[in-house]
Image (cartoon, rainbow, N blue to C red; front, side, top):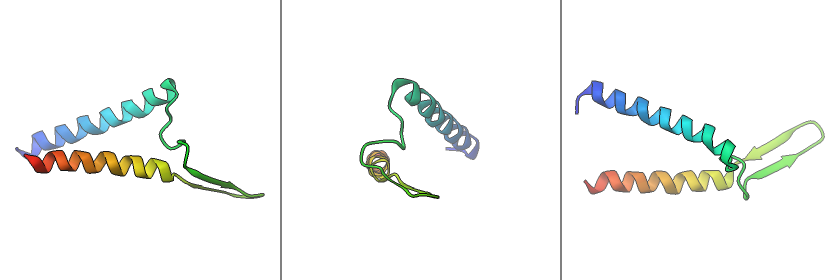
Amino acid sequence: MSLGRTLIALGLGIAAIGALFLLSEKLGFRLGRLPGDIVIRGKNSTFYFPLATCVLLSVFLSFVMWLFRRR
């Protein structure tokens, strides 16, 4: 695949991911606010660690990479 086609494919992929983030908020599924994400609120600060979101993204990306390696 040429460099130009690769860049176009990456751009379309990033645009699709952005569209999914926008649509997910309207559907009630907000990535980054899943049950299992850790939020600790103090008096003057907030600590947020998206544990469940990280696990979900890791599983998804592992599956995608597995599909690409099968070819």
